[in-house]
Length: 148
Length: 130
Image 1: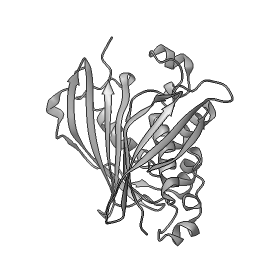
Image 2: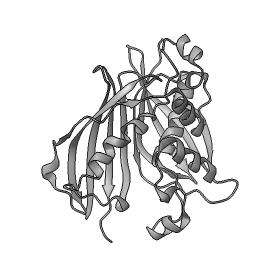
Image 3: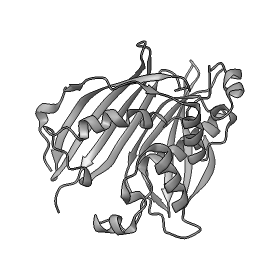
Image 4: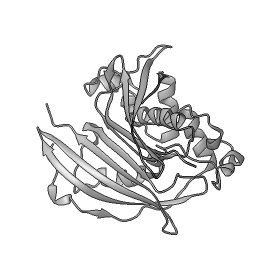
């Protein structure tokens, strides 16, 4: 699957704010077996200096999903989602996500390439509060498998 | 320095729960019929679920759930999860590569399933000093 390299550098408008709920953090933490009270009990989180329960490190994927969709479903880019596999993932945190955060995601396509019949797409999504405070930068590389 | 290994059991029920919590409902993570149709050996775990379990290992080693400042992985091999009570197991180990003067520890992490690496270039930076 070949992807158009002219998409490198393309930016997408910020997504609508994502309201990080305390119960969503608890649900996510429970689903991955993270039992530390800092993910569940506001008092435990406050004891570490956080305003409310703290999300586990990979929770930002829940927040960036709409931004990822915006790119993968961009008809001009033409990714066949049924052929997508996840290649790489990276999170660089300014601070952890906490309940009560209202977060927006701004995405850029950092790299597009085709090798061995497969397409590779690297995106960077900057997650910040609605007030503009940076929280976490998320890189994701997907592989669009070529037809065998 | 090598950190003590951690083992995580992964069953189909875990994948269903993760799908709901994360919003990733791709049928390759719950339907054998769909997974085999697209050429997979069977239902596979979400890459991000594996990354989340490894993240748990990292925060447990750090002794602080809010200590991770950078975390990246490459997914190299799918984690196939059979439809039985045992499911499968992911084993996670790590070595400390560097401890910086400003209180950062860099880990190099290995995650295997049935003896095969499922991640490569898995690295984390954690803040050790509070």
